[in-house]
Length: 392
Image 1 (cartoon, helix red, strand yellow):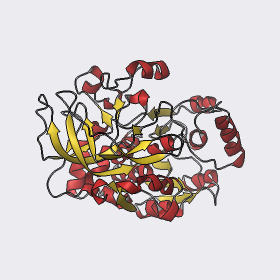
Image 2 (image 1 turned 45 degrees about the vertical axis):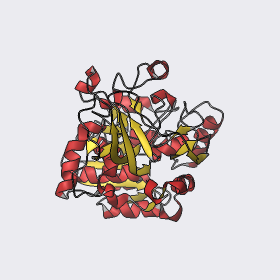
Image 3 (image 1 turned 90 degrees about the vertical axis):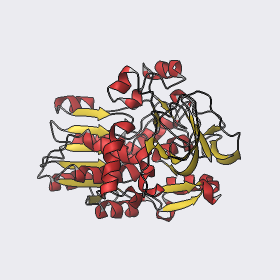
């Protein structure tokens, strides 16, 4: 089969690899009908996430048709269409029983390495470093899905791939980011980053009843999409975010702040940009926490910081004293995808949300390597890329 593989920093290749096979009775093999490049894939592309190995198949947002099922997997049948959550979960451990699927205690087959880095193991993830299990990802023609009897979302008849594909990551990620805010009808929700996760967070915050939603970015196409979704767009290259947030909240600051950017954020002030890029270059800091600093500063006392943006290591110069003295609540984590998908699928069926609005580019899988660069650099108005193996 053909697949996209990581061979080093900014080196994604369209390679021929061995077809996956059933390795455990709970497995299934999926013929991929659609997959996507996620913003967190760019952290791998840019070389910021530890634990990648040359030849790793990338991608964690995918769906397709079941073509083979392990003998102990009684939940799936050949021919069914499924979306695969990026978090692999057993459904049986203590964390899974609590709905904390992204910290499943059993699915990370490199759990000892993860525990050394994070203190405890986290769940296995598709296509996302050896620290999360080293599982081959979904930017491929076929994928072996471990724990497939639990790790799947069945697709009802009548829905297109484009409507449901993002149930595997960005839609539940944006939803969880908004839910973590405990939104009240009087709240202003400020969202840093109007990329795909930010766009889903905007729609989620509005569905959950926020009084006003503010989107902070600098890419015109992203800001236009955010405004079309009901947010007030702010361009941090053209105006003071502090001044505008004060203006929009009568000087009180937003009650809820969402970091939908993560470790590669850009500074609104040049001194921050220079500081973090220098420390990152000499390996004294792995992540750029510009957004975290700004959220702490502008958030209303007693407010909440929700962090769906991915961080991989160490950050510096966080004004933690301000956060403590303002009584801010931090809520974060990889998405517990399956916790949200039943509700979100029902909302798609009912027409409350159609996640396909975010797609700007659909191409064959073989064009994946060039689309990584297009997506990263926001060329050609690119906001979200869908890859179709059948186009190849």
